[in-house]
Length: 225
Image (tube, rainbow, N blue to C red; front, side):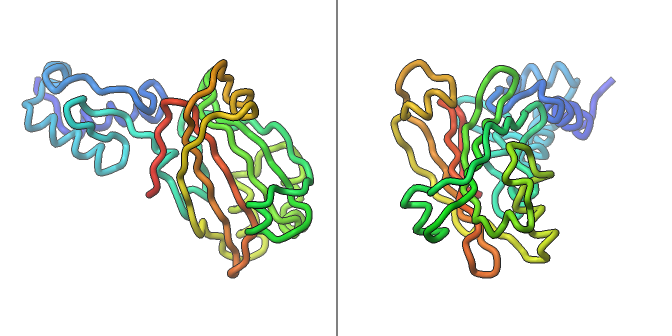
C-alpha cells in the first residue's frame, strides 16, 4: 500500500519533536525513504520540501538532508518566547549582582547588573553555555531574576507581560574565539577549541535592559535569522 507525502512528513516531524532525531542527524538517503514509506522519489522530495519549509531540516550539498538546529535559527520575538528544543534542558547555575564587563556596561550603563549563568543540555551533553546581564530595574518587575531559576518562558517575556512594554532583540552578532578556561569548564571540554559566540542585546522602549552571550559547543551550528 502506497504511503503519502503528508504521512512521511508527519512521521519525521514527530521524531524531531520527540528528540529521537536530534539537530545534526542525517535523514536516510532518498532510496531508503522511498522503500520505507512506499513512495516515489518525487513524493519523497515533496515531503522533504514540506519539512524544509517548516524549518525542521536543511540540505547540505553533496552530503544530504539534516535535522536543523532550530534553537540557533530562532531570533527576535520568537527567541524571547523560548529557546529550547524537545529533549533539551536549561540548567540555571547562578544569579548574582555584579559589576559587568566593560563591553556590557557600554550597553547597559555603569553600575550593578544581575548576571545569570546557565547551560543547555541534551542528556549528558552540554550544547551551549550562556550568561546574561540584566538591568537591576528589571528585577523590580521580575524579582525571579535574582534567583537561580527559570523564568517561564524567559525573563524578557515575563517583563513584557508584567510591565506592558514590548521587548525586542535589537541586535545579534556572531563571532568566534578560542575557548577560555571558563568556556572549557562550562562546556566540559578537555582541550582548547574554536567556539562560536552569539551576543544579543535586548531593548524596551529604546532602552537596553539586557545583554546576553551564548557560547556553542564544538559542532553546534548557529545562524542569524
